[in-house]
Length: 164
Image (cartoon, rainbow, N blue to C red; front, side, top):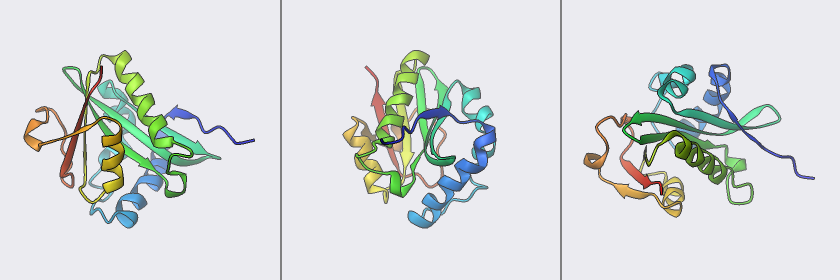
């Protein structure tokens, strides 16, 4: 029997597990020049994510964080997806963790009155961009982002999804 990997809320207590998942994917796997110092939100999860009216969710396998997604509510019915990461050996359609996390976040948005989702990523992350496009996101120009969108310095591709 296959074990059930369930989505749960991530809190400050999970900060190190989240860092241990995200930093190697950013730095080693994707060669994105970002450090922990560039991402102080990872040590202030509750204040930055839940505190904004958004959230932070993850999936663990036997106590190890294997996937995350986060949402910042920037007001005016708009939300920003952050920290969408899946450990390499857990990727793909077989487990569908990225899709499950995105669907979970979208369901939360609908209850929270968020009608538009935005995100920033890096052009070299082709699989991530294809994933968002498959899930009805469209690529938008930087100047089309809402004024409250928190731009990360490394991001150079921006996506938008209007929730129906």
